[in-house]
Figure 1: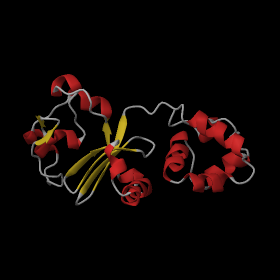
Figure 2: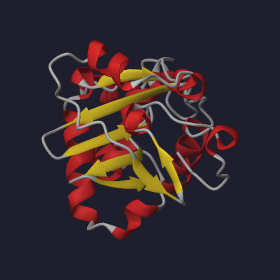
Figure 3: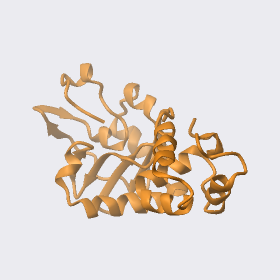
Length: 190
């Protein structure tokens, strides 16, 4: 599980050398381990040191990746961007300068631009907005309800946009999404 102690991973013994090194760098949970493995795997390898062979590394990473990610998603907001992450700091969706990108479409953007958002999210993880992904499937809220929930209007302007020939409320960008039956579209990926 994400909140398990990092020593629960294979090849990381409780109070052993790897556990001690990770703890000293603030990596105490499986989630911490996975986030750093996504954001900066070289740094994680450096922390573990030469004592962790390539084979041990592969075993540990493979075991970590079996972790159940759960339903939480994390949102980084800025003046010209809205980026949604899974619990291990992987980008799920982004709205940049008013342009919507699914995780698949992010490959079309300059990688260093996206990596900047990933690093920013990682460094400020505790200040990201946390939302429940399960709510996304059932809670389609109206523009008025969004504005009541976010009265300071720091959200982007709420207006419809067209995707695959269907007009969908901007609530999708706020972390609320239509399932394929509601939207009449089956090829969306979030």
